[in-house]
Image (tube, rainbow, N blue to C red; front, side, top):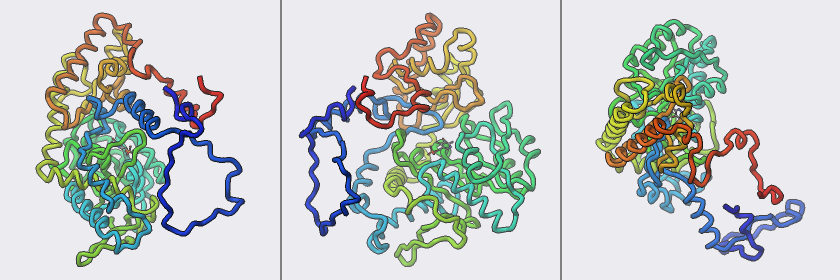
Length: 480
Ligand SMILES: *Cc1c(COP(=O)(O)O)cnc(C)c1O
């Protein structure tokens, strides 16, 4: 497929700027370019066709089954987009005076109330731009809390080995030493190991429950108590909230801080670097440390107020506002019952699929799962040479998006599947039939799987090469 630069033709450009409605300001000579900016020139239809072609080459939630585990790639209802395109929401500027954006501040405030109710927390900041950024802000709250008490010996954060990779990264970025604890045979926290490492150097624990294996830790109250008894705080990675929202709350499980991925659980589309939002909720005793720009309401008027001992700013301005508009729309559309139903259906779909697929592939851990489950293709690889990557590519060839591969790291040849609640039984059955087809191919001719996919726009890209030597700039001589 050709790039915009290659389709470009001098004179085809279609830029139409609106009439100037402010006094014209001329840039000083020394600030100006010597040569015009080499932007591609295309007519509107050429541009439209280019992006339509690109879109057709891409597999998204709107193209078909997309069971990406640990990421909740769920359907984004269109009404969310309608609300996010209202001029009063989309045409505002972060420097506008407070009295001109009262409605937008009300959106933040209402979403804060809803998220407090859903998580069992007392206050929320919307500044963090995504989940991992929320983790960093949350871990900085832990740091500020201990520092404010003069408790400076707490330098360690405990993290289970099944954790999302961003957890240890965030703890390390905040200056903590990470202590890893292994999972037990059931895939949950090894309580005795946790008891052995918790102590007066423990700043806190970072945990997601259900964990990234899709398992709900039944010892959760004991786990959070061990940390509290040791003087540490409990941090909940809320990216897996889709399984439990409306049913059980991190605040009631003994957690003090939680980040949410509202671009996952609350339906804003993500992937491809789209805007996220990783609000952080905390219990009342941590409110004074939250990042700047907390919104307070006084007799129906909203204003910004910085918490007394704020950790400061983690991002410019207030957060990704339109993502918050979508989340509030989603929450209001579903209501308390609908939120609960979404979780119930997500868990039902995952368990149905787990049960059916266990007839063909090995489960990493048995028993009931939550929103996702993990297959291990270790035996398949040993017996036939077919890897999780081969299976993923064969699924793509057969019209469904592959699940997450090779995560969590503690499972060999992992495939992690999360169907989400919006898929019908018919769609899930079709997906199961595709997995069965792949299973049959492995039995009859395993070698053919190494060649997959055959008909997708891209077959097996050199992902390492793309990461190590990214080509980020158009250079004419490099066209091949
Ligand atoms: C997605 C995810 C994160 C990171 O969130 P980003 O928005 O991608 O930064 C953290 N923890 C878990 C369990 C996740 O699934």
